Structure formats: structure tokens, C-alpha cells
Length: 162
Image 1 (cartoon, rainbow, N blue to C red):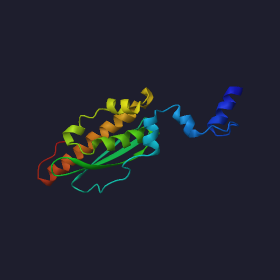
Image 2 (cartoon, one colour; image 1 turned 30 degrees about the vertical axis):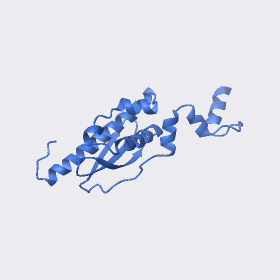
Image 3 (cartoon, helix red, strand yellow; image 1 turned 90 degrees about the vertical axis):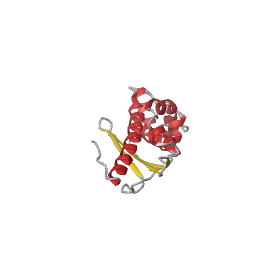
Image 4 (cartoon, rainbow, N blue to C red; image 1 turned 120 degrees about the vertical axis):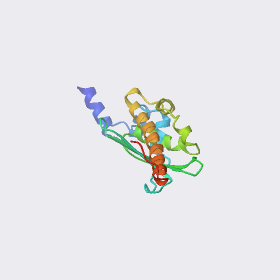
């Protein structure tokens, strides 16, 4: 009982220990790459979704409530020139989004489709319970490229298959 009360106080910041902080507690649970991308997310924001050079991928995991939007700006040669994301979810989901937005920049559409969730998970050292975050990031990349391709097909008068 005493151990439970002490743990609860520590988690709520009511501990008498002076060196306890939520960041130090989290750093014991998450890899430094996750903490870095969570505390200093790269490429947060959005583009105009109606821009014909922007592909938008919106994916979610209903089981945990994470929602990820990744947008890529693609030039006429098929190179991704910029990326932005907005994510509602846990620190691992935010970190996976941030990392994905960095990895897609400067690559071709074909190259980014080779990015696998296992690579994202390995780079962030995600625990098994957080692997769905890397899966969302991979799905968001694929959805953004697919959205861009659909926009280009529609602009060229082609029919888009569902």
C-alpha cells in the first residue's frame, strides 16, 4: 500500500524528491530519439489541401485515438520538396510523424513508398506497445502519395480507381 501511494505521488509531482520531473521520468521509458522528436517536432503545420502539388494523408487508429495528417509538396519531377504534419496522439505518434516528415523530404514518390514502419520503429526504438505509431506514419506516407497521384490524374482528365 505504501509503495502504491509513493508511486502515485511521484507520478502526480507530489513527491518529496526534489530531482523528480515528468521529463526525467519519461526519459526512462522512451528512447532519446522519441523524446527529441516529441520535444522538438520538425515540420509541424499544414499546406493548402486544395493545392494540386500537395498530397494529404489522413490516417487514424481508433483503438488508441491517434490521428495523423501528413502532407507532402511535390514538384513537377516527382520529388518531394517539403512536408508538414499535424498529429493528435501520444508522444510516440508525434515522434513518428516528425521523423516521417523529415525522411520524405528530397526523395521521389517511389523512394518514400519504400519507407517501412519497421525502419521508423527501429530508429525511434519504439516498444512493442507503440508499434502502431510507426504503422500510422507509413500509412500516412502512402496516403499522401496516393492523394497526390489522384489529384494529378483528375487534373489530366483521367479516371481514378478507388
